Picture 1 (cartoon, rainbow, N blue to C red):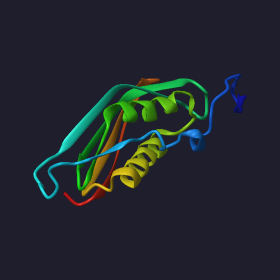
Picture 2 (picture 1 turned 180 degrees about the horizontal axis):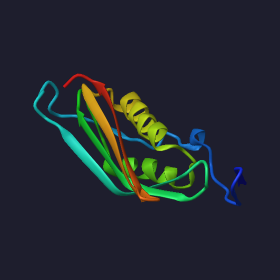
Picture 3 (picture 1 turned 30 degrees about the vertical axis):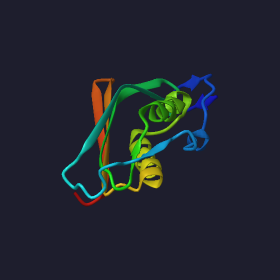
Length: 134
């Protein structure tokens, strides 16, 4: 149950702590030492939940990185991101959480996670966070 001074929503959502990283499957990168490689992954159908209203949030998540020793297996990333569909989390926290989780699993030279969220109430939001040096 979500409550606020002006509204009340009956919606069961999970806490951000329920998102697990054990599904993320790193793969050995066969071109170690190559610095001029940037991998970019887009998930254009990302869904999470507004922690204030319980309403769904939609957007595109873009993950760009320069690998060191590991790259991510895409199916495992898909299952990781799907966990957020019933999680109440603010955009700013979400982008930082994804970055922290991906850095912990891959240890890349550099990584940037962007969230491009669709408009609600006439306001769209973009958030990005970065790790390392390019």
